[in-house]
Image (cartoon, rainbow, N blue to C red; front, top):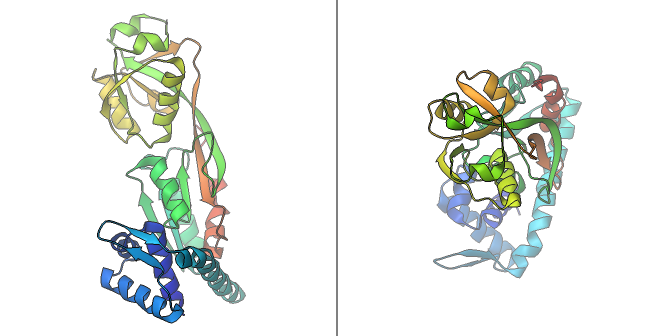
Length: 296
C-alpha cells in the first residue's frame, strides 16, 4: 500500500467523484482510477460503489477513510520532524481567502513567510463561492487555512479564531429619497432594491438573518462579490446596501442611515481544520498572522 494510493482514495472519498478528485490532485482521471483499482486489488474488496450517476463509499471504504487520513498525517509529521532537524522548513501551505480581504494584509503576510522560509510553497485560492466555499474546502482538505467569515454556529471540524469584527451600516446614494430621513426600520426597506454579496458570503448571511428575524422580505437586485464595487453601485443609484463601515469612508457620494433597533456586525475569522494536525509550514504561517491584522 502506497501513500499515493491513499491520497487518491481520500480525494475520491471526499469528492465522491473521480473527475473532481483528479482535478483536485492535478492528475489525469485515468491515473486516479488506476490507483483505486490497485488499492482495491491489494485489499481484496471494493472501496466504492460506482454507477453512471454517483460514486459512494462501501462499508470497507468508510472504514478505511479515517485510517487513511491518519496515515497521511503521520507521514507528514515524520517529514516535518526530519526537516526541523535540518533547520529548513519545507512544505506547501494551501491558503484560501476572499477577494476583498480587508482585515489582513495578505500580500505582506505571505511575503514575510517567504522571506523567513523560502522553501515553503504557498498556493493561494481566492474564493468564488464565499466563506461557505472556503469552509467546505477546509473540511475536504483542499485548504490548510482560510480567512473567512463564519456563522454564529461554526461548522464541526473547523477551528476558528476571530480576527476582527466590524459594523455593517446601511448606505444609500446622497440623492436617494431615504437620505432625507435620519432613521429607518427594516420594514421601511422592503420595497427597495438591494446591492449585496451572493449567498455563501458571511456579510450576506448577517443581513439575510436580520431581515428574516424581522419577518421582512427584501429584494436583492444586484449581487457582486466585491465591497468597493457594491459601494460604487449604490453611489450611482442602483440600490441600497449594508456595507462594512470602513468601505463608506473611502467612497464619496454615500449617505449613512441609522436603522432603528438593528445593529449588524460582520466578523472575519482565521480557520483551520480541527481534525488534521497542522504541518510545520502551516504553523510558520499561523505564527505571523497577528502581525498583519489591520486595525479597521
